[in-house]
Image (cartoon, rainbow, N blue to C red):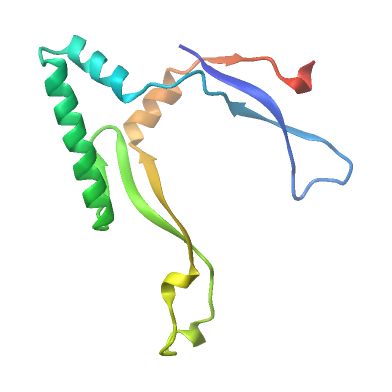
Length: 138
């Protein structure tokens, strides 16, 4: 199955004024949801759908709990998940002040996913590409 992409406009911060830039971006072709995953696992194994749902639901809860405890979740041959913080930079001189609130400098919380090296190699080695229509190529 090919990776679909589209040519889209972009800005080049170091580019020349008055020049239009373009880049290739992967295009989402659909969603593979929890239900689809459960059904695929059920058909590929001897496990019942109810058991698959129970195991994946429990795994989801354990992953949430351990992420909030600051642990990195390593899913062998898939990748790793880890909580990250988006934070403002601040002068070190404000740290010793008693009224300093580190949480006030945190702009957001996210989750990073780093794919396993073997998974990346597989996707890169087995990919094919398919361009979809773009407004830039009308």
